[in-house]
Amino acid sequence: MSVRNGRPLLMKAQLSLFLTVLRSSVAIEHISI
Image (cartoon, rainbow, N blue to C red):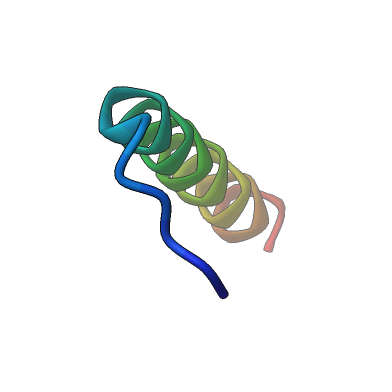
């Protein structure tokens, strides 16, 4: 994986979005069980 210094804000936004999706999917799994 290559990390580019050019766009830290974009990477942070993608990371936070990924974490949000991950948390919501985990919550959905817990609710469905």
